[in-house]
Image: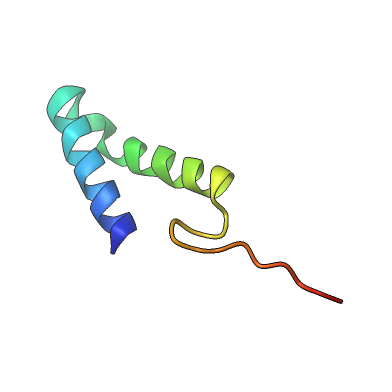
Length: 51
């Protein structure tokens, strides 16, 4: 739910301030940033596996 809220707010702000044509591009950029910097998720924890 948190991710959907962030994407929705950012898409609406981008369409209001930049251009409605970039609405989908903003969502893709947000997804790429999250995957690059937080691959375990927004609220996920890093897990260490003991062997």
